[in-house]
Image (cartoon, helix red, strand yellow):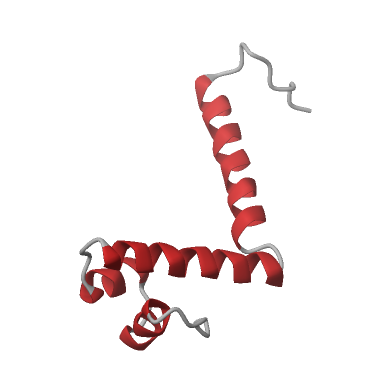
Length: 83
C-alpha cells in the first residue's frame, strides 16, 4: 500500500492531488445535478450578456463558448437556452 501524502511528499504527488481536488470541485459546481447545471448555464449566459454589453461581438462569443449562433442570440436576449 502506498504511503499517505505528507507535507514532504514529492512535488508531482502534491500537484496531482491538487489537480484532482480542483477536478472534484469543478464537477461538483458545474455538472453535478440538474439544479446546479441550470445555475451554471444561467451564470454563463449572464457572463455572455455582460461581455456583449462591454463590446465583445457575437462571433467571439460563439467561438469562445462553442455554442451555436442561435443559442448565443437567445442568451443575449435574456432567455434561457436549451443546452
